[in-house]
Length: 147
Length: 440
Image 1 (tube, rainbow over the protein chains, first blue to last red):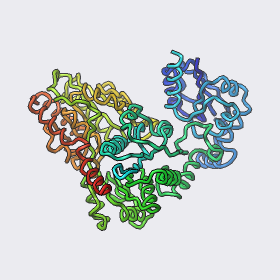
Image 2 (spheres, chains in turn green, cyan):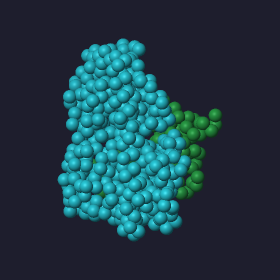
Image 3 (spheres, rainbow over the protein chains, first blue to last red):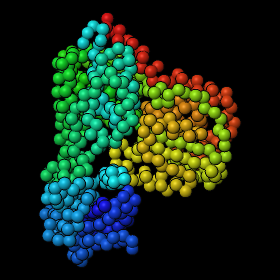
Image 4 (tube, rainbow over the protein chains, first blue to last red):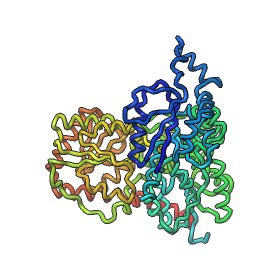
């Protein structure tokens, strides 16, 4: 049994790419795919696993009139999504449990890297990778070993 | 080293089992020197680096002559690392984008080449050790990456070992548009001039690139030689004359090669779809595409989407084709599609393999591309007048007509044309001359 967790910093965005990854990982032999995202997603399919959202209220707080400036400022400070996601992931029990049960963690976005880096160091041997190809290779080789 | 066994150090960052473009030439050159009686030490990056960053073709390892020694010099490509645990703290804190920008600048401090520049120190140390252990009579460095030239120059300066620069590409020359990638007075320009002054010989893959360099560096014009690519006899085993197509109503087209953003893939897919829609080619025609998508181990999503969209029109993408499976791939095709980027300085290594098959070839590249010069006398050749979907569709139709009309005699002539383009025929004059000079 191979459990893949997708750790994504997506927020308020189309989730079609994530859906494609779920299909690819399942096809390659993953028995369970879980998704952790920073914010709520759109275009989620019925058959996709329910994503665990770290900050469901992020949409409300980002209703300012000048989103570009606001997000740019946020990106360059410790209030930015990278740091925000790192703090949320550390405190979120469900997310930590999901990561603890994972065999492979796919880190989907550069914004998720800080949180992933801390989690990877805390967790020890579970591979955290930023390439879908590598995830697919690992899944295929574990399927081959099992066979 | 003995008087009768000259020692060659061959510097090639990408060597077997890497799946990068120049590996066939690198392996063939090292093998040819070994065959000519040289003791050959190849200096290359570790296989793990290929696995992580550019992809590997394990079957390539068997292609290396057992007499060739390969020394692996450590190389890490920090910006291509995909294992989060291997990320340094700075990358986690700064974010990948900022980290990559800073890291690329730092890498270029030691040598002005993105990503590969940092290899300089390790390469120079390794070369010194090898030369101390077993003094070299000659160094051949193949580029790109151009840091390979620095290794050869370093050993020349340090120990007076003559060296050959083998250009598979341009350094200051943009082979696609003929412009300058770096100005004459730049750091790259100054380095290239210094290397060319010191080099014993300089090899180029085609005459157009040599002419460009002759004009830019007239002082080194006499050292400049053309050592064309060619096809490797080991790849095909015993060559047989191809036979006319048994079922021209369901022709099988094939494309094999690395698909980079320079390859007109979008125009080809549109042209193919159009050719079917306008009945230029039979409805049962298929196009099988093999190779990597992009330069790196991770395939490019945009190129994959283009291929996926044309699936209903009979296009299948089969991914990487290992060296050991190449002959089989060509065997099952009726005609081969040669899609290349624009540029009169570009001669694809693939064109030689295509010619070796003796099968009809349809060129999907600008007529000015240097591959047209290789194919000009090939009897089973059709070429697009320009790279537009309409022209591609019409030319594919012409190729189907050719499949109907070509006779056994045409296929025999195509087979003979291929014989002249073997790689060993290109390499042996230069190796013979260098052997004479070294052993004299």
